[in-house]
Length: 216
Image 1 (spheres, rainbow, N blue to C red):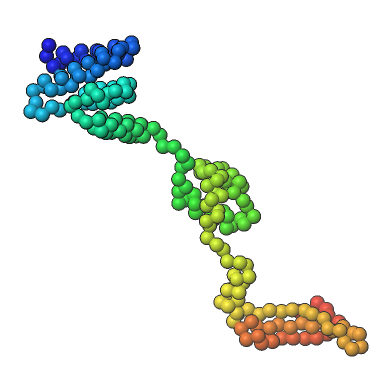
Image 2 (image 1 turned 90 degrees about the vertical axis):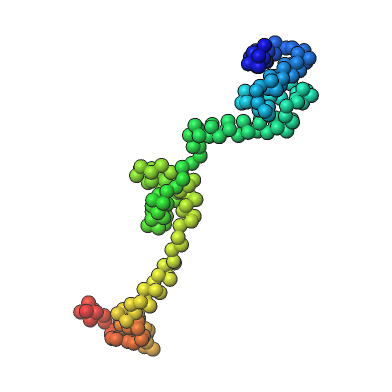
């Protein structure tokens, strides 16, 4: 019987051991015969093929005293084969499977969230999410809420008004009406215009009987 016949017998014996419960001596004999087939190959140094490695990986999982019958290599080598096969299996699975999890929020969607939140300060995540869905964008409400919290901060209205005044104060004037009670319990109506650049009064007038013509 040549080495190929021995390997075939070993494979058939292993299949029969998996199907029907066999004595441990028979399994040990099968393991020793498999290694003997490796040594009988015409090589200067025994080399285990992929089928040999698969054989020992399965034997390690199904037969507890497998180390006692191992001669060709050390037990850590078989463990390393098992781990390498595990990594290769999951690497192939990850390539075939579709990506899981939420889709990443693109720059276009992120900028649109910032724009809608800025132009509509009273809107919250559910309404903005509904607007994006109607526009055809696929994004979750949780992602919208998260990116709303990262939107650029808008200065307060008071700060914007002060900035506007500082930039255009030379061309801006303010006017006001107010009333002043007199000692004789009469009422004077005052109107004045003041320039913002130097706080200079540009026009003022006082009357007891204001009319539309007087205002004009």
